Image 1 (cartoon, rainbow, N blue to C red):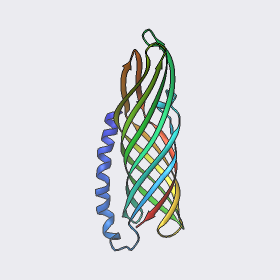
Image 2 (image 1 turned 135 degrees about the horizontal axis):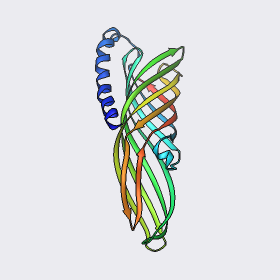
Image 3 (image 1 turned 45 degrees about the vertical axis):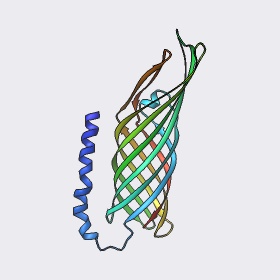
Image 4 (image 1 turned 90 degrees about the vertical axis):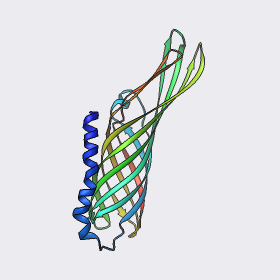
Length: 218
């Protein structure tokens, strides 16, 4: 899985340059706004390893800058954040009974190549991209014998994603819309212990986000 994702990332990174050479000459003199920024807000849901481990849905927020490579083709770079948590109870010979609360915060850097399909004031789009995901785990542990402890750890994984959505032009510059994204990632590998209490996150970040968006062209 890791080798497949890394190969896909390398192949994808070459696509914008090749596509740009093919389409930019025909579109260079256009007066259409060729750049935009946007913000997203919505909900993230896991479907892979973290879903199997009982992690909850959470808020998803993001921002992006887009540049038109051609009339209907866009290269977009963005940042994205989502979070989730889980409560675990257990016991060990050293700690006694314990309550463990894991909070995971994920910050990502994404690059997406999209094709657009205008239908009047509405534009539909779809695309694919790659991303790096910076995972931070914060754990609070309450034990009956050893008191309370805090632990944190982090990991970095890579992934690929698909996007689809649409936006409505309020004016030639301002637009609002909705977007869905599905991602596949490598497995997180965080393993440690605190006073005989195991702390581990082993699984992918596979899942989807559905967000509302607002943007501005320039």
